[in-house]
Image 1 (cartoon, rainbow, N blue to C red):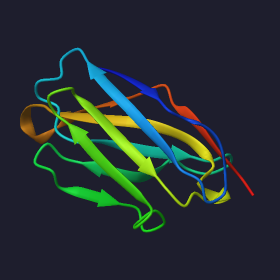
Image 2 (image 1 turned 90 degrees about the horizontal axis):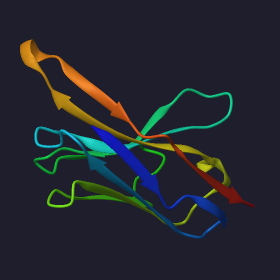
Image 3 (image 1 turned 120 degrees about the vertical axis):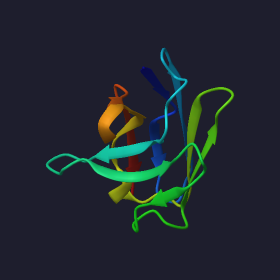
Image 4 (image 1 turned 90 degrees about the vertical axis):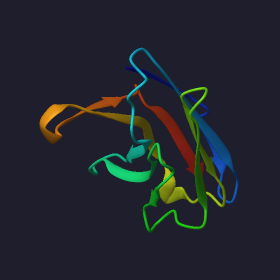
Length: 119
């Protein structure tokens, strides 16, 4: 599975950005897709994820500001980010997972896209 992100950039605080991530390759058994982020000096953290069955999880810090959506026909996941804050500045990574045998799974990552929010 290959993941290609787009849509990052520089925006002022209070602004909006939309990230997209398209999956290709062995996409037929992908379960969850979503977004993680990593700010300088910090660990990578979950932003939002959505399962194939449309169960959604958000980090508390983005709840009510970010919206994740998924188009299974296009194997694409989107992250609409509004009311952006300087603390949202990070590299955002697209994520997908695929169940394997015996309860294991394979995780896939995109190359990352920079989001910078200026104050």
